[in-house]
Image 1: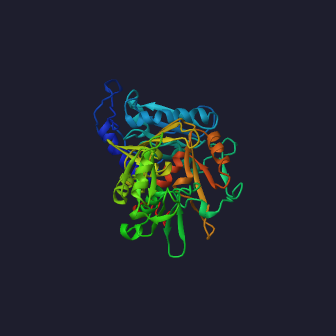
Image 2 (image 1 turned 90 degrees about the vertical axis):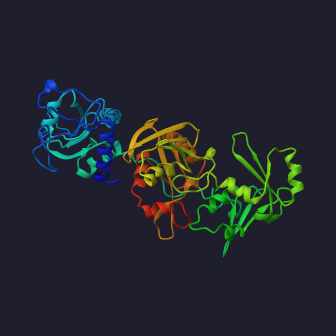
Length: 439
């Protein structure tokens, strides 16, 4: 998200939750207010962008770049900045100075630095020259990215962490292609094998559920035309049968995830029902149930048990994968809260966004894997939703990758996963995760 857009969003938040402030001429009369109050020209001297009239960074003796944040203890965006500033102060000690000034407690500072809205961050190079200022919430990755953009080195000579990068498989996937699901890349159980006829080849899927994910990944799909191409395996005989004529035993496993068994004969389905509880469904009912829950970003069919929980406003939805869950913020242009599971251990990872940036991350060590594949043109593209993940730490990611030697891609921060989605245009979002369109 571009900086002007961030400012507009944060101004709106500030007016709603007391992010704005009035800076009084008389320090003794300044008292924090919980109501929004626009700053006036008389109370705050305006600072034009790029002007050299701003106060120089306070000198500390050490010639280090400095990040100065001016805010207040009761301003909501300011409070969300607090752990970010604290983390930067510890992580970059000796390489960058980080200072916070509460302008409600010290209103003269607002006049000194020409502050109109809070929070405001001012970036100074090692000589004390102001290089940039930003109004509103500013995430860690954006702060670090801005230093890099300004050409200010805060590494202190330490090499930047690159994370795990795997551009070539550790071992080739030797499985026969007709034994691997086209959608989820899992092994195909011969008793649930599902086929979709194409013009030149058949798509092999591991079961009816992956067919509905496949169907919901086709732009402008005609349900009748697509389902006429589908065959499912009769659980009793192992023979293929037209999906629309089959009977389905719809049950549930120990994790609450649906199970689907197809039968050419309804009596055979009823017999199986005696030992495997479930409901007998026709194709139309099965289709309705399978397409009832969709990803709030890419609109793919999803089981809640497999998905990330996403809260936007007072509404709860799902992201079909960890990266799509980040995309909900871009699609809806709203702040979101996400609960994702570690791909290796199932531990919860919680993410909150504000103005298109990461506002909080629990645990702070959480990281992301961006599964990628190289196309015929030599360019890297997303390997699809089933090859993405969040992990509570890099060690868990490494264990997950060890079990997937054919996987290629790279480790990125969760902030980068969000930033990648926030860069998408509405046209790109409309094509997200669609077959032949996902880049």
